[in-house]
Each structure stands twice: as C-alpha cells, then as structure tokens.
Length: 328
Image 1 (spheres, rainbow, N blue to C red):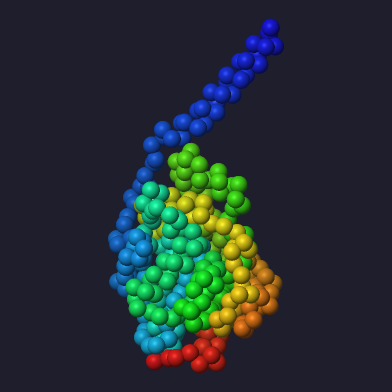
Image 2 (image 1 turned 180 degrees about the vertical axis):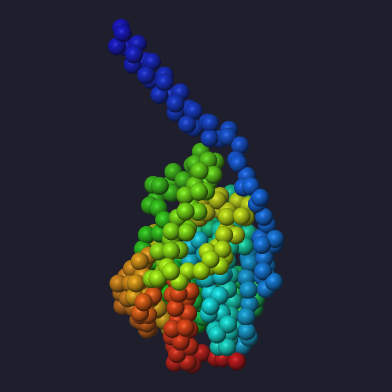
C-alpha cells in the first residue's frame, strides 16, 4: 500500500511539474529590450529603406554602371563589414549592400505576420534578394557573399541562375549551420519561443563578440569602431526574437546547397587562417564548382574583406576583367 501511494505521489508531482513547464512560460510577460530604437533612428546618412515582400530592407548604394555587385554579409554582421571595399568596387560598377533578415537595420517580422514560409528561411532570403533586384530594376548582378551571406548568394545562383551573372564567395558556410532538426523543433515550441529569446540575449551578445575576434587572423588589428559598428544589432526592438526565428528556420546547408549545379563564373576567396569555416574546407570548394577560380590570401582570417581589403579587391578586379563583365 505504501509503495503504491509513493508511486501515485511521484506521478502527481511529475504531472504537476510538466504542466508548470508547459504553462508558466506562456504566462510570463515578455521583457522588452530597454532603450530599444527603430532602424530609422540608427540609420546612417547614406542609408536607404525599401519594402520588399513585406520586409523593410535597409540598403546602401554606391557608384553606377551596367555591372552591378550585390554584397551579402555573414551571421551577426551588417553592411559595415564591406566598408573597406565598397569605394574601390564602385569604380568597377554599381555596388549594393544590404542587411539580411534578422540583422542590421532591416525590419524584424514576427510570427503571425507571414502566411507561408518564414522570411528567415534560406528560400525566403533568396526570394527577398531577387525581390530587391526587381525593385531596383536590376536584371542581373554579381553576388559577393561572406560566410552565411556567401551561402545565400550561392543558393540564389542555384535557384535563380538567369539572374546571377557571377559569384564571389568569401569563405561561405558549406555544411551544417546552427542546430540539427530536433533542436530546431524544440526552439519552435510556444514555450521556448516565449522565454528563449530573452534568456539568450546575453549569451548571443558574448558569442557575437567572440565570433568576430575569432574571424580575424590578427585580432590586434580590430579597432573599437569595428566593434561599435555591430552594436546597433542589440539596440533594435525584437532583435532577440528575430535571431530566434532565424535559428528555427535554418537548415543544414549540405541538404539544400548543390555547388556542382552552379554554372555562373565563380571566384572563391579564403584567408589562409580561417578559424571559423576552415581554410581547407574553403579550398575544397573549388573542386565542387566547375567554372571557378581560387585565391588564398596569406595572413588573413574569415572576414577577409575587413582584415585584408586590398588583396580582396585586387582579386575581384582581376577576375572581373578576365570575365569581361560590362562596366561603365
């Protein structure tokens, strides 16, 4: 009798704990971000905003000409990552940089505001890029992407080959990015959607800074203004919830990216000390894309466009001239 009563008591306690775990997170008020600002309040003088597929995209435009370069930044970055190469690139044609969904000054759609695919999914991000090109009346462009931005650029070339004139991939993510499917399922539960973003704020801020330092071959070159340029991410309303939605939408790149199907002329650039993606992995990418060239930059890390902008630009200029893309 005592054993039966103990089992019953333990069962009741377990059920109560499960109910508490399922219900309490849904009852906790979501703590707002203190001092949150709008993207427009954080905009630069050259910032522009445009509505594309229910997302307000933040972008900047430089130069002019028939050849158009569109630049896609990596995870937790923004348009600033291209600051050292946009001016020289603008001598080759028109240059567009923009903030991808969940980053920079682009708007953060929340669940319930979209009907079909999440705007943070990789498919939606490629559709968004093509939508931006349509809105700016750009028929074809050379896509330049770093890290996760390089993967989105490559996926766009895979899905919309007629719109991509060429690719410049700076250490793109080629395999699993973020979390496996079971973890993403947990992140998508109402309970974790309710409390997860708030609990992850500080860890994400620390991770972002650590990732940035790890992305350089020589972190002593990092200036305070470089770090400051990425701080606005943590001042915008719903930045934490947007990154949470990005984590939910992210899928393993190896399940969707087919580099061997890409036909656009491709330039692959890697630093010889890429601690994030791995220099060896970047080099092996050249074997997957038939119409590709490889440039390895010495004493350079993952964000070569920031740490080694001169050799990055020189490589792009040489490759562009070889391909005889139209210039102004």
